[in-house]
Image (cartoon, helix red, strand yellow):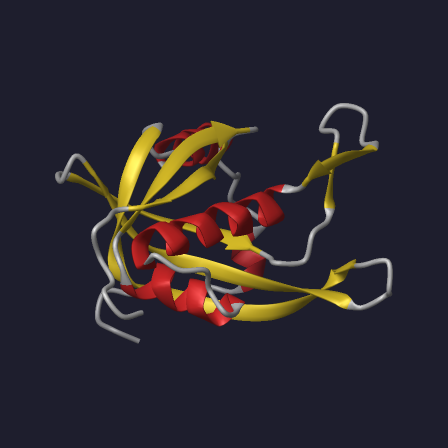
Length: 166
């Protein structure tokens, strides 16, 4: 332990009250300004099988998680993550919790990422890996809004011209 530090036990934490106002303010402070942000490559890509999101065939959904830095108007910086999946699932109505016939946010993000890749390269991607590599390595635009007290990516677009031979 460093000089000036005093070791406590977990029991000491039970004597401290949580500051709900500080938590609420901290959550508000993490919200990004709504608008169109530009990504700052290189982004982190994580690919996983989502066991909680199984398709009609009972197989878990493959999901790509994108995480990285963004900038707004070249001056304000932030960080965000979002997910996309080439495997369609239908959205669930936020109020009624009833499934709809519309695609969910992960599939919508995939459709937008697919289009951004095509605009940037001039061709359709061969696979999802090409889309993820494009989003990781090249600047593109993210439209960000807030939903239910959280940042949410609602649009992914290319920043052409970019890739000559992706």
